[in-house]
Amino acid sequence: MDLRETFATNLRRLRNGKGWSQDELALEAKISRSYLSQLEKGVYHVSIKVIGRLADKLDVEPDEFLKRTTKRARAK
Amino acid sequence: MDLRETFATNLRRLRNGKGWSQDELALEAKISRSYLSQLEKGVYHVSIKVIGRLADKLDVEPDEFLKRTTKRARAK
Image (cartoon, rainbow over all chains, first blue to last red; front, side, top):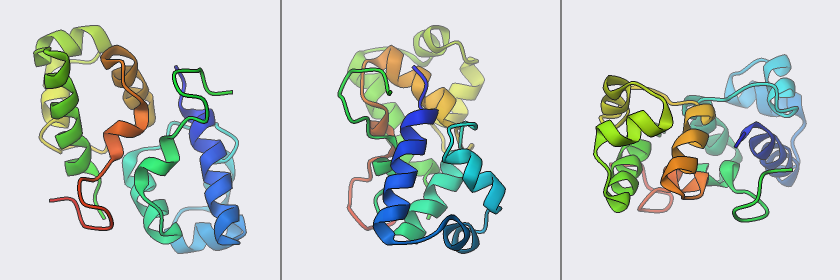
């Protein structure tokens, strides 16, 4: 099971829900724009340190980032 | 916000729910016993790569590991 795509999909959804560009979120969460862009493409296995910062800035619960749309199914 | 303690608490709870020792889970998830022990003490910021493996072996959804007991409250 690979959570990178699940995380990427949720991150894009939550960022768009806040109405922020990648630039704005990267600045707020103190990560580079290119790292954020790659996280949204599912390139990296993010750590909970960064998940915590993103959740804080987007004002959502941290577990929102790991929710799979289909339970027990492999993330698309 | 620091998610290490939230993750540690949930990991201990989910492992105990499965009735496994640290040794058993470490072996199944292919991580070292000492790393697992330290994760359960909140020492490290785990990556979603390891969260995915732990969720798979414990047969739980990955987001279970990041759920805070008190919403909007700092993890104890």
